[in-house]
Image 1 (tube, rainbow, N blue to C red):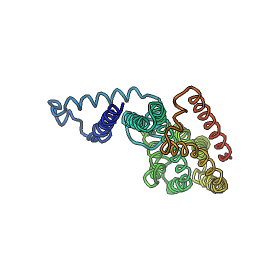
Image 2: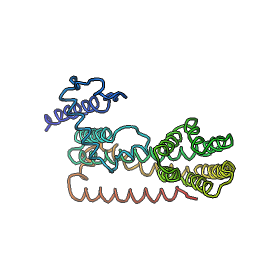
Image 3: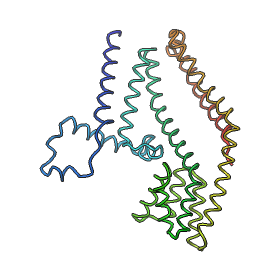
Length: 310
């Protein structure tokens, strides 16, 4: 066992480095197709490069609508193929399993290898939530850009296009997506509704409804958007007040959730035999499972307490 562990560690580290070199840091494809630049075929591609391309293509088709799908990555603001992210998760799970094997044996290795994909999924959810919050914070200023373009005599699409060029991310990305979808033939109302659902923004849904009503009955859309923008800014002020008042509760929730993991890691490093009982018999595994279930219930409960919807 002492001889096998270093060999497995070197093998996993070498595999992770090889994945990073071949997939993660793979150069982007140029705008000109390879067939036009090399009409007689790509003779410079090696067998390893072909194997890498085929593996990435298979993973892109396999990921589909799972937790690491292209839509999930786009919601989080990550511009990478799902296969690249999936390979990074697999490499992280392998490294975490090796660390657990070195620190606490096979039981801890299995636990850490399972936790790594869950951490990646939580990281994507956190990035998506931050992106949506930032989109809502920018919405009031972006409405001023759109209404200003309407007052200058531009159409709705021209005003949204101008806002896409002037706004900051992620608003610029979402507005540019709306413009591109309409240019290829999609209905504007459907594109606005899809953006509101993707960003989980009730305020942007109001904007889409205002534009739809204006197209049906007419009227001064710029004035309507000004009123909607004023309402959105007032809601933003109330949200900021609620966030400040609930900061103590959110900090308490973070500390309570991190405390068991911190104490467990400290005991694992200081006295590994003290926690080895939890992974060497059935009662220990049952206790770990019960603790995980209670942690999930407690985290959801604390989230409901500190998250106020209005």
